[in-house]
Every structure is written in structure tokens, then in C-alpha cells.
Image 1 (cartoon, each protein chain N blue to C red):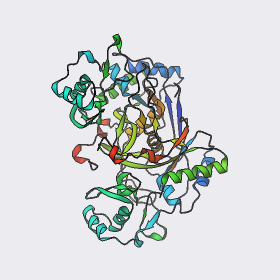
Image 2: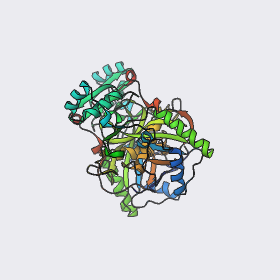
Image 3: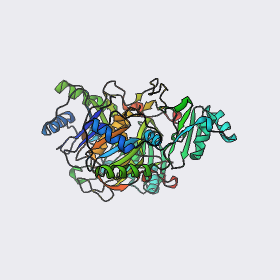
Length: 256
Length: 256
């Protein structure tokens, strides 16, 4: 970082409602063109989880879901649709916390989050039924594929972050986090670097991918359907550490 | 947020090492002038906690600290200087977790954090002794004072965030968080707003101040002494909710 470091973020305008099979790379490039922007090496593109999930066909019609006895029981406790609870359980390793309106789980990918990240808001319902939207199967893989598709089309390698909004212990409100990433360092390891006075830095590992997602969230707002992609220019590019590196193994968690 | 939302962040260059009694408003304005930047209404300035603490004289010479029996006992467990542990205990309501090299406490202001946010790195030591730097007494108050000092000098009201880097449960790496704020909404309450399809938004409360701090952290890097102030332009300004609103009362914490 130099002293005149500058960072710019643009919301990519005019994206349509995304459907299963849609080509996100094409949608992104069309949106950038409308805005008079072109991708350059070192750029990072942050894409909201919802549009990635939709393009990958992760929308489930609740009418097709039969809740298990466990889902019926939990649904009564948390007062949520037992079909939704069935989907949540199918995406989770374990239930962390239940209360009225509260179902916090450990997602199969290791995220501790409400409802396994499954969303009913902002989800278009083709045919008028009730739909739910699951997280991508493999968000780091989604990021790698989008990065490769962009590189193939325009010959420029950019960083990709797939972002979501998570609640946190001890703090009020959600913040953007990186659930998938490619072509950037999701975690910055500064160990061994010294401060101005030659002391070793205490804060040595930075959740860089999460900070990128939080910054993009400022531009996306929360109606991510309207602005689900953000271009960031000016980050220290380089390296390739997936967002999986941001998930702390339970045994190493000092706050638990 | 409109579809062509743009956000710009500049690191404010050339700040000197800050000492007790220094006028942060004057340092900020001088730094901006060197960079050819001027503050405008709606701008937000993020200031690293370290320089605020230093300007407020929160540096403590460890030679002046006599550890209590409890600090000696804990110091042996966590293998830290018992004088530092004494300072940590003095800033804390309770000890959350101890292990070798680990001392996580609930700070008197409600933050759950390592070492009560007390830092020995990046702290200039006048006279050559060992010094530690405590968090500001009242970071929201610090932000209000800086905002007022700037308004008095240049007639422009900007938003202020005092930022720090916190570790988090379940996630690897620190992220920027807002420990103080003035002239902006640290928490955005979107309850009652609808999505594109008329459904009520599920994610209704956003940790806006923390997202601003995380974005600024991308520019500051971790050597915050070198770039401890960041100017952000393009945020939806308005409102005034202090960073205290980001601290969740323990009884309301669904993740605990």
C-alpha cells in the first residue's frame, strides 16, 4: 500500500433478473459496457450469492419438498415452514441454535448462519409457487468458473468474490462476507512484517476477502437484485487463496 | 442506491507520527491538502483507532504499571507481560477466554476482543521505554469531537468512523470494525422495505458502520500508522447513529 492508495467501486447497472442457466460472464460484460466500463487486470468483481445461485439453478419449489419428522418438529419450534426447515437441514451439518423465528445452523460448507443461507426474499417465482434459493454447491468453484469464463472472452484475468450477508456474534447487523473467491487472496498473512518502529505486527492475518465483500455491500445495498455485481479497482492484486480459507476449523476457534 | 452507484476511497497521505494533544482535524486537513483533496458534504472520514488513542494520550508506560495478583496469575497462564495483563483487566468487564498467547475479554465498552484492544505494535515509545496503547475512553465521543472540529474549521459536516481490526468467531482473519462514529448511521434498519417482487426483505438490519470500516481497512492495510485516515465519497449520507448501536447486548445475542 502506498500513501496515495485509491480504491474505486462501481455498481454494475442494468442487470436483468437472473434465471437458471444464465451466463453471468455475459451479463456482467453487458452491464459494464452499458456503464462505459471495461475490466482491467487487477480488477476485482464481487457478485452477490443470489445471482450465482439462480444461474446455477439452486432455486427449489417448496411444493416439491416433503418435510421429515425432524423438520416438522423443528418447524414448530422456530415457527417456520417445515418444507423450508427440511431444505435447511439438508444443507447443514448441525443445528447451532433454535428459538422462535431463529434457526442457526452450521452449513455443510462450514458457515455458521441463519437458515443455511436459504432465502425466500428477492426470489422470482416462475409459475407463481413458493420458491427458496440455496447457496451455490461450491462457491469457490463458482468463482473459478466465472473468472475463467471472463478470461476466455476478454483475455483479462480478474479477481472474483461471491458475497453474502451474514449476521455475527456480539455485533448488531449483517455485513458482507466472501463465501467464494478466485484470483485473489481471501486471507492476507502479514506475519513477519514489521511496523514503522521495527516491531512485529500483532494483527498478522487479515480477512481480506470478507473486507472486499463488505466494501461491495456498501454499493449493493441490500436489494442485491438491483445491483448484484460490483467492480472494484485499486486493490493490491495477486495470489489465489479461495474463500474456504476464511472458514475457521471449530477446533482452532479461540472465541468459542 | 441507484444503479450507477459509485464509491471512492482515498488514503490520506503523509501523516506524521501522532502524539498526545495533537490536533487530528488539522492533521487530516493538511494531509488532504497535500493530496489535492477537499472535504465535501456527505463525505465520510475513517480514522484508525491508534491515532485517535495517541492524540488522546492513551499511551501508558508499562514501567508505571504494578500488576495485581490476578494479573500475575493470568499473565502466567497466557504468557504475556503481567503489566500488560493488568492494563487489559482494567479495561475489561470480564475475561472470556484464556490460553497460551490468548487473552480474550469483554471490553468495558462491550467489545469482545483480544487484549482489550491494547496494542504494543506501531506504538512509538518516547524515551525508549515499553508502552501500550489503550482504546479511546469514548470512541463515539472522539468521533463527535472530530466531526465538530472539522465543521468549525471548514464549514462542512462529514461523517466520522473510528475503526479498529477485530478477530471474529468462526472466520479466519481480522476485519475492520467501527468502534466510534458520528454523522452517519452505524446501523441501517431496512425493516419494512420490500424487494423487487414485493416481499419484505429478510436481511433488515445492516452493520453499515462496520462495512465502512472494513472498506477503509482495504486502503489502510494493516500498517495503519502509515495510512491511518481514509476519505470515502459516495455513501448514502444522512442520519446519526453512533457505533454503540453496533454492540449487541449479551441477552439479545442469538449466536451465543
